[in-house]
Length: 110
Image (cartoon, rainbow, N blue to C red; front, side, top):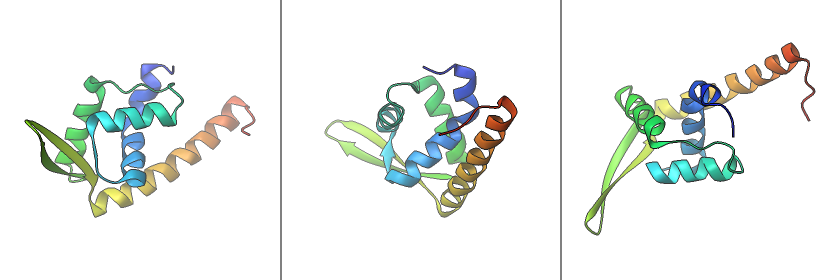
């Protein structure tokens, strides 16, 4: 598992990318998809996920849809058009950052 400090700086980008690739998702589904994609190395807690989702929603990067599931209410998140553009830009920026860090740390990427 990676340090919380590394995750904190990348959580928005991770969420944006997962939603860009998978469309409408609810919170737990996002955490499980990240866990699966990272081979259990990135575990997103509710305490980190929901404040980030709420911030992105307030910034009009995400839109929400509430659906009744039996007696429970499930809130789905999806990207707005602005969010889709931001996701693409953030992923590109992060890939460039990884290359830069690899050079700085003199690590060969495979």
